[in-house]
Each structure stands twice: as C-alpha cells, then as structure tokens.
Image (cartoon, rainbow, N blue to C red; front, side):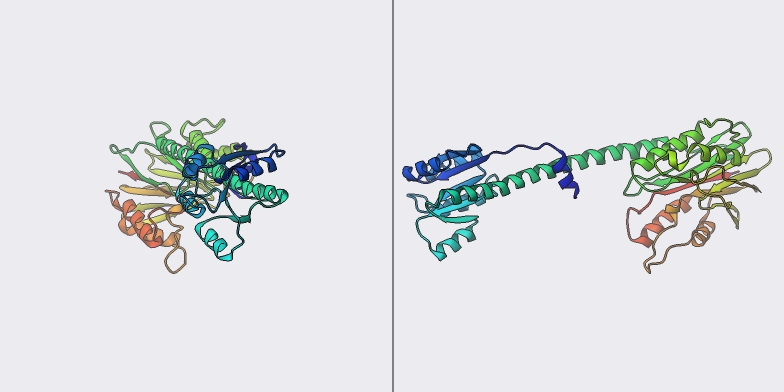
Length: 398
C-alpha cells in the first residue's frame, strides 16, 4: 500500500454525496429525469433550464456529474462542454452528453471535447442511474485522492519542518571552538540530505585531562538523531555511573552497558573516545567499530584505532584501549565514515588510506585541510550534498 493509499484509508475525508446537474432547455426532460431519480435517496438532483447559467450553476452546487443536453438555443451543448473543461473548478467533473440522435461523428466530437459519456435521451431508468453512479464514484474517488495528496503534502511539510528543527538542535549541541591556549579545536559538520546520527564533542575532565569523542549512530532519521543526542549527552555531562572518564576503557564499557541495541530499537553506534593528558603529553584512546583517528606530528602520521566491537552490539565485550606519546606541535583528526566512504567516478570507493594521505599532505595550523577535503569529496562524488553526514574534528596540541 502506498503512503497516499494509507492516508486515504486511515483518515476521515469528506463524505461526498452524488449530485446531478441536468442542463436542458426542455422542462419535460427535466421532469422526466427528476422522476427517474426520485426514489434514489442518495442522489441529489439539480436542474438548469437556461444554458447561459449552466456554468454559474455548476460552480454553485459542485455536482459529481453533469447531464448535458446537446441541442439548445443560443448555446449548444458542446460549447458548454468546452467551458466546463476550460474552468479549473469544473474541468474534472464527468459530463454525460444527452442527444436525440445516435450519430458516430457527433459522439466522436463530443469525446474529443472532453465529455465522458454519450446517451441517447432518454435512456432506460436503470441504465441512467447506473451511469450516474459510475461516473460520480470515479469523480468522488478523484476528489478524495486529491484530499489525500493535500494531506500527504501537509504531512511532509510538517515532517520536513520538524526534521529541520531537529537538525538545528543537533548543531546547537556541537561545542564551541577553542581558539586560544595550548589546545585548539576546529571542526566541520555538514549534514547530509537526511537527518543523520553523527555527533561529537570535547571538554576538560579536570585541569590535566582533556576528552575528545565522535560517534556515529547507524542509519538516518529522527531515531538515529535522538540516540546520537542521548549518547552525546552521556559523554559531555559525564553522567554514566561508576565511570572514570579519564580511562577510555571505563567509558566504553559504561556506554556499551547503557546503550544495548535491544533497549534502543535495535540501533547501535560506533565511537572513538580519547583522553589527552597535558602533563604527560599522552593520548589514551579507544575505538569501538569506528574509523581510526589520524595523529600527525610534522611529516609523520599514525592511524589510531583498536579492534573493538560496536557500542550496543554485545553485552560485556572486553574493550581494550591504547596509548601514544604526543609530540608538539601535533594534531589529531577524528571523523565519521561519511568523510571518506565516497564513490569515485569509476564506481570504486575512496579508501581510508587515501584519506590519510590527503590529510597528511595538507595538514596545517590554519585548518584549511578540512575545507579542502570537503570540496574534494564533493567534486569526486559529483553532488553538492553528500549521502552521509560530513563530520570531522581536529584537536591541535601546542
């Protein structure tokens, strides 16, 4: 079932009544049709004897079918058919042409101008009622389908507005850039066409330890964004119980316990978490199913990752962390897979090694390499907006 059909089935739309407008200059025909429909309690009958007022009458009552006489004084029936089809409010109303003659050329002209049916008057009562019901049902279905599309459009607009608000809220949670001191931060976050699950942050745990982290929730949409925000808040508020946030293994174990998939709609996330110790110039780090971070000292570079499982995938997983000495000046780049999982023109995927070489060659104190990278992957995939969030965080140690 399509989304429109679902809306049409589940929602209450206008209960249209069958409404007939007969346009005929002969009162005897008007009376005959009135009597034919008299016992049909669900059919409302309207009669217009003056053809010059037919369009006005149709606009007034909005019939579900028009019975249009062919031969009339001043304005013939086919001219009125043209008028109906030219008017935006009448163009879809079924028109049954009534004629005293069974002529193939007249029928053909009638259909060519937009009539829906042709009857030699007056037809049998049973046939007339059947045709009225048939054409009215089709038109009522069209009206209700149009209501469904309008409801769908409104729903999509409201959803787009809510998603836009959610995206802005996610951005509002991202940290302010640190531009003075011995630790500087910079980042680029460009959301994809869909609301994603990337988020990141950093903060001082105490006067000697600085935490940095980036996580990526599986999938896209509001659910992924909500889980991402929840996990981000757990890290930045340091609200996980019995957790030493200076120790990456302790943090990862606590996050894994708190965010098991079976408690979060089968969603999981990857996470890179590191702690820089200022006095020792060391960086402890742990990656759970996440791409490696890149550490650069001048022309030297390292990929920082551990062989750990995703967060939420397995209870009590034995997470392990690593530690590396940080030379100054140096920098670390932390990013999500949306930065490098880019399809090249030849159909192959850009690799993590190619990303490493790109950043190593362009790494600079000014931080222009992140802008260069975004422009590069845009050009490579040929799209202004990427398929996944572009999230990259740079921490510089001076």
